[in-house]
Length: 119
Ligand SMILES: [Cu+2]
Image 1 (cartoon, rainbow, N blue to C red):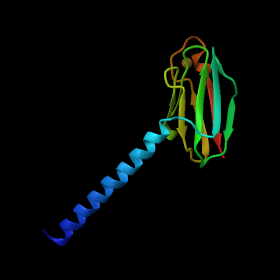
Image 2 (image 1 turned 180 degrees about the vertical axis):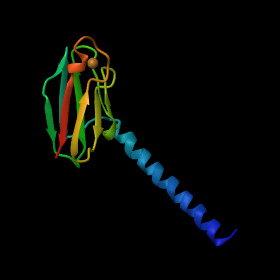
Image 3 (image 1 turned 45 degrees about the horizontal axis):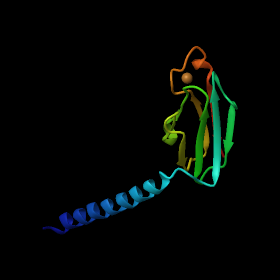
Image 4 (image 1 turned 45 degrees about the vertical axis):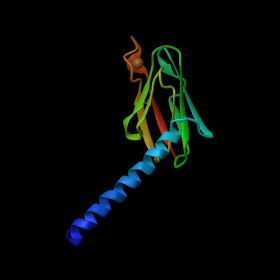
């Protein structure tokens, strides 16, 4: 085995360890609680605010409280909430994220839009 091969093997092994460490972290986040919470309420056919503000770079528990079949997806943040999955903890990066209802819920669906501002 050449030195180069040995090094790439070692790199691969280290990468596996790092990935499994990340996996452990994700598992603990699946408890889905954090001290900082943002509750987004959805109903037919609006969100309770047009603009939500949070301080970023900390774990935030996003909670969807919904009357009716509504959801939120923000792909950039890997955030996805719906009536069957109402809580998710993420550590969002600063930015402005517009989102809309992710479920084809009815006649007012297209009006269900809001903005998340992460400071
Ligand atoms: Cu909808």
